[in-house]
Image 1: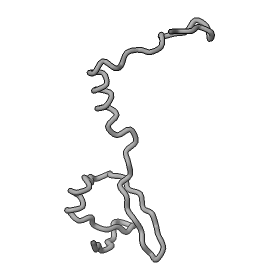
Image 2 (image 1 turned 180 degrees about the horizontal axis):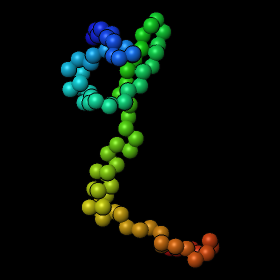
Image 3 (image 1 turned 90 degrees about the vertical axis):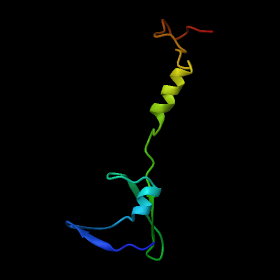
Image 4 (image 1 turned 135 degrees about the vertical axis):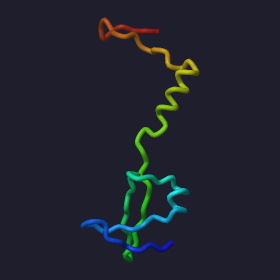
Length: 83
C-alpha cells in the first residue's frame, strides 16, 4: 500500500487509508509502535492496550461467583495457618 508524506504543522505524517482504519479499528489517539528495519523500511504496529478487556473478564468472574475472598481481611500473626 502506498501513502504520501504530508506536512502537519511543524511535523510530517501520512494519511491512513479508510480501509485500514476499518480493518484495524483505528481511532484518533490510537497508539502505534514504529520499528525501523534495514533498507529504509519500517513497520507500524498497533500498540496493545494494557489490561484491555479486564473489566469485562472481572465482571463475568463476579457473575460466575468466582470472586470469593480467599484470605481473611487481616492476619493476627505471620504464623497463622488457614486451611
